[in-house]
Image 1 (spheres, rainbow, N blue to C red):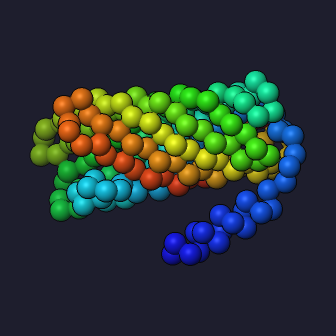
Image 2 (image 1 turned 90 degrees about the horizontal axis):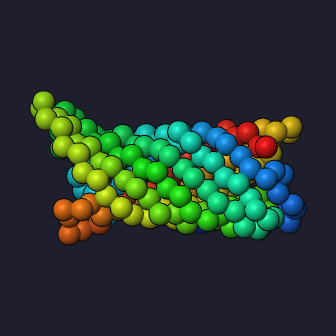
Length: 174
């Protein structure tokens, strides 16, 4: 599986053209897979990732800013009656190379664990290291392929948690 992903990444990067950005900014949505990593993967199953707002603005052809708001939903590995939701708001710079955007972001995170009539919410801070490859569809529309690594540490926690997210999205360029 790792070899397939590596070959896919090399092929994608090798066909990347050196062209000017097709827009100054964009606004989009995305959907995909959220896979917990590390100790969190022992407790929580992979779930659905929703990118509710994927926004970016380019100040120059290379530099810009990005804002992403999204959430993922999971069930625990041992008990389907316990659900975990992780919501985030990320903001940071955007570095563009052709159709590829690299987006390191500071993240405000909120995790909610709910089950058996109880609900526990914990706020956290973290970071997102993201990459997006943009495919123009013509006109102002485009498709994006996203890979993001979200790492966060709760205020009352000694350990950090992380989620690797893969998603595809639809965006409007302006």
